[in-house]
Amino acid sequence: MREWLAILAVAVITIVILALTELRKKRIAPYCDAFALAFCEAAEHVLPRHLAAQSLAYAVNEAGKINVLPLDEQPDALRAVFSQQVDEYAMQRFRVMHDQRINAQKLLTGFNLIDKKYNACLNHCYDLMNLFLSALEDFSVIVEKKDIEDIESFLYKQRHLRTVTLASIITPACREKLDLLQGAAD
Image (cartoon, rainbow, N blue to C red; front, side, top):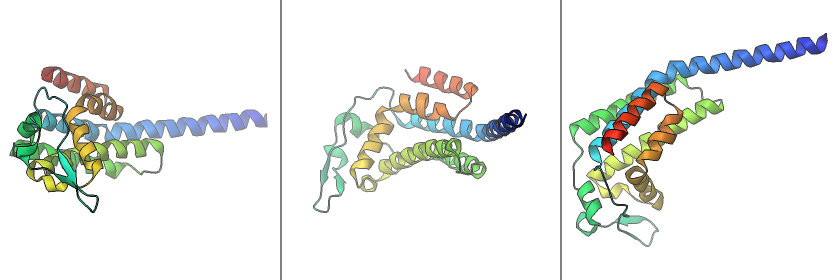
């Protein structure tokens, strides 16, 4: 009899934990969906439809820091991307990302794996967009090899960011919207 009571207690605790996890996911879903849509809309706005994979040209100084070469010494495809300025639409989408990330993070405790996953996804995509938009204004924000890798990730791995990274924290309805947005870009 005691074994059955122990099993029942474990089952009840498990059900409560799963229910609370699902409730938390439902509460943060609107914020994550809005964040993902703003990210994709901004990316669609600042990136060309098709971009040949090329690396930013840079030199490493004696301190081991990256010095990105001037715009006129960059490969042609990247010169076209980085010659644009950040406009109001891109900044408005970035502000939406910022606000939605803050709203979602207010609901995340960071004490469990799900919260850590959500935080990691939100922060990663936010940081990529921030670095890219900052680099459009001034290459001097790129100071280490990881910055180059992050810029290239933003430029060339949009499909992965949308179908894996963001897809892991958004609702199925939002995934469909992102698929439609991606389909329009292809």
